[in-house]
Image 1 (cartoon, rainbow, N blue to C red):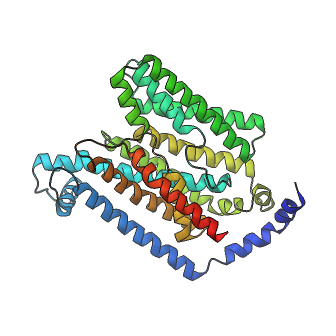
Image 2 (spheres, helix red, strand yellow; image 1 turned 180 degrees about the vertical axis):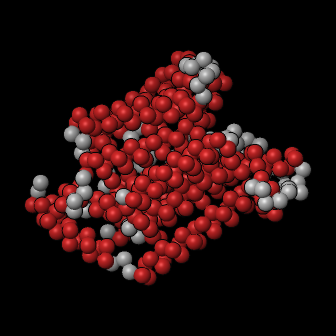
Image 3 (cartoon, rainbow, N blue to C red; image 1 turned 90 degrees about the vertical axis):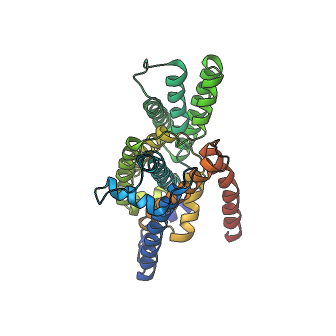
Amino acid sequence: MTDTERATAVDAPRAFDAAVRSGTGIRRLRGGALWTCGIALLALSVAVAVTIGPARISVADVWSTVASHLGWGRSRLSPIRDGIIWNLRMPRTLLAAVCGAGLAVCGTVMQSLLRNPLADPFVLGVSSGASTGAVVVVVLGVGGGAVSISTGAFIGALCSFALVLLLSHTLGGTTDRVVLSGVAAMQLFSALTSFVVMTAADAEQTRGVLFWLLGSLSGVGWSDVWICCAVLVVTLLICLGQARTLDAFAFGQDAAAALGVHVARTRIVLLCTTALLTAALVSSAGAIGFVGLVLPHAARALAGSGHRRLLPVTALAGAVFLVWVDTLARTVLDPQEVPVGVVTALIGVPAFVLVLYRSRRIT
């Protein structure tokens, strides 16, 4: 440890307590206002996004259908229009919200945990592993039809993350080793995916796999929504419970240890939690990039760096963002659909450059 790091670790408890005491009532009120506005904006976004498409549907129609299926009355719509809303557009829109919220939360946690502003949910190789698992099921037919593409993707993601844990533990377990192990796993599973597609897939399979690899919310059902939503809620509760610990990691792992944080155990718990959430989201929606990279930076500009306020705001921002990105992806070239990951990249790259430019001006 250098003299600077040693001094930081010694002064960390006083600096941390001062940072905590600086959270005044005005800032808490601001956080509450952000959450309230975010929830209202998300509800409005979902209601409006469901109305957009070839079939002409109003917000009142959406409310009538939702109320009917929740047992609050009878729908006045025809069975076809009711089915379009409840069975097609609503689960897709809600899954977009869940995926956006989950990826944004994972990005926030990983950027704080690894102290790397470029960290995102896929830095642990989870996306590449999920892609390999999905390709093995689709192209090679592993499982004989008994294993779905989502199941294959989830298993592949877990295998990739297990490899990252093994490599990082073997190499010392520091944050830079975790990132390097993730990069190695990402390259390995990406190569395996390309090899399988090039050697065993026909043209139709290649097109379908490529579309899924770029992120797609088409064909999702309510089961996908419930599973991903349950994992998101559990993950968010765990991360909120560790909010003070995540704040401590902002001072570095040595300083966090001086504050009484069990660094290794906390890192493993939070990495496993975010990896499982990412695996669940990727297995349902494919690889959707830039959400977990850009949204945390935008949310910090609104809510500050305290994770008790930051995590809910980030989740709401990610949910609203991906709802509208998916709406754009399925309508901009109607009847052809654009992969969601393509749209997030087209929007995310300029946004990330803007974030970097603003941070450069601040520093």
